[in-house]
Structure formats: C-alpha cells, structure tokens
Image (cartoon, rainbow, N blue to C red):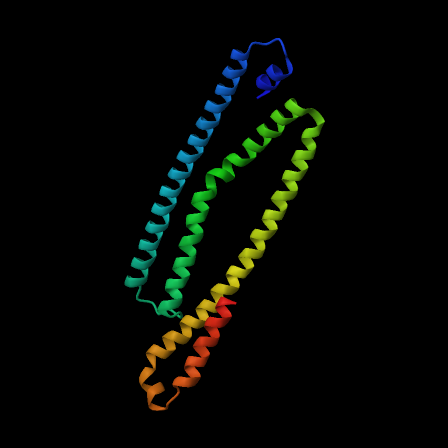
Length: 190
C-alpha cells in the first residue's frame, strides 16, 4: 500500500510500476480473504463436530443414568441444546480470539508507520466500536437468558399438559391450561 501511495505521489515513476503494485495489492487481498475463508471453514467443521460429539455424550449419559433427575425431558433437551450451541460458538470464534490481539497490534503498528500520529484517531474509534459491540453482546446475552427461562416455563406447562391430559379433560381444565401455555408463549416472543 505504501509503495502504491509513493508511486501515485511521484509523477516521474512509470505506469508499469503502479500497475505492478496494484496487482500485488490485489493478489495479497485475495490470499488474505482465502486464508480467512479456510480458517472459518475449519472452525465451523470443528465446532459442528465438537457440539455433535458433546450432544451424543450428554444424551447417552442421560439415557443410561439411573439417578433421578429433577428436570423434565423438555427442560433437559432445552438445556442440552443451549449448552451445545454455546460450545459451538466458542469453538467457532476461538481462532479469532487467539489471533485477534496479534493482528490488532500489527495493524496499529503498520498504521502508525504509514500515517503517523493520526493512527491514534483510528485506534480510538476502533476501541469505542469494540466497547459498543461488547455492550450489545452483554445485553443480547441477558435477553437470551430471559428467553430461555420463558421457554422452560412453556415447556414445563406443555409437559404437565401432556402428562395429565386425562385429568385435565375429566375436570374440563382445558381453557385455563391453554391460556397458561399461550400466555407463556406470548411472554417468550415479546
């Protein structure tokens, strides 16, 4: 990039040199994008394998477990699905977490070398946007936790309905149970 900028500023340099630096920049960007795509493909494959293996282990453990469990089957399935999703995202994002600080330091150093003290403005904006993303992620996590709790309530009500369907029909409690389930579902959505 610096060589291309130097070429643009120098009026005496031949146009072939500018074309060469433009082509080199283009090729380096293709290589960078290809490396990122390969990294993401490997990360996704590893994350899928990890979460699938974890699900298999958890469900096998649940099936052979002889100890009483205080949770319903729906709650256990929901818990497993949420935990394996968290594991999937952790494995998927791990390479960025490991390589992120190295790339950030190298980018800051290169930008400082290229632009001088004006690079600090870009770094400051980067830090502010990163902080904003972190705050949004925390808020999203809180909302997800609330949604999971509401989903558990709805699943518990559905399990109770299916378990005691004969008694509900016998005593004509369909309306209160359906209102309870619909209310839980509305709370879950909104």
